[in-house]
Image (cartoon, rainbow, N blue to C red):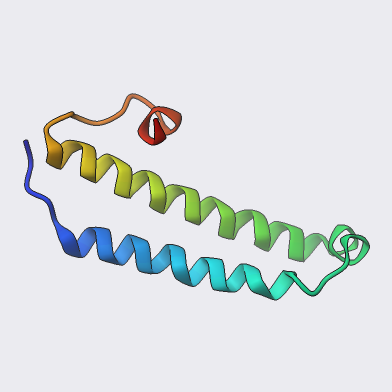
Length: 79
């Protein structure tokens, strides 16, 4: 079992919260506007990717700290 580093978890969760706020910028767009703006779509994709990566980092860290060991893949880290 590894030690739980609360600061790692806090930083990742803060990053998730920040990125969720950033996604708020697209809420006012209509579906047509969103589909028509490739840059907005790509930025949204990247922000979502960062959210998922941070969530997986938290999952893996908590699993290792609990003694369960790392999950074999992203999906398993959520299960």
